[in-house]
Image 1 (cartoon, one colour):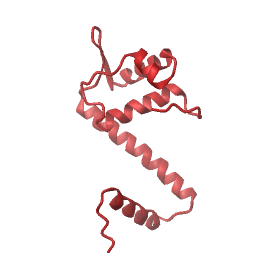
Image 2 (tube, one colour):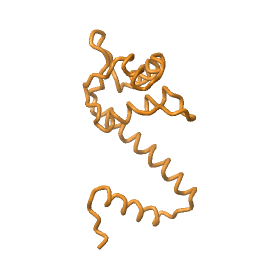
Image 3 (tube, one colour):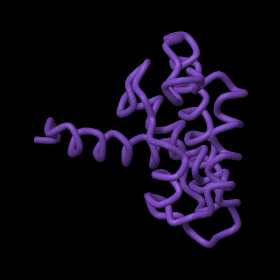
Length: 127
């Protein structure tokens, strides 16, 4: 993951990274995450920044700590499903706000999305 120097705080970028990894299933329920030190090296940030992000993820229930074994991804399938829908809602609203600013109509965007979806899934039926 590349941490950017934009307007989003670094700890928030780390939270976003973990939320996407958990919601997408890259990090499976119950899987152990790397140590704070290892994550700080991976993200090239201060360990305190990683700690802050992980504490928030734990507070939200996406991670839990086993005192002797480290931090793990929640095994709460409903919480993960809820996270997934929260993320898609945010992405959708951001997308819609952007395309409206560009002046696209619902029909234009619907057709564009359909075409891109078919290309991405290898099922272009436009013949």
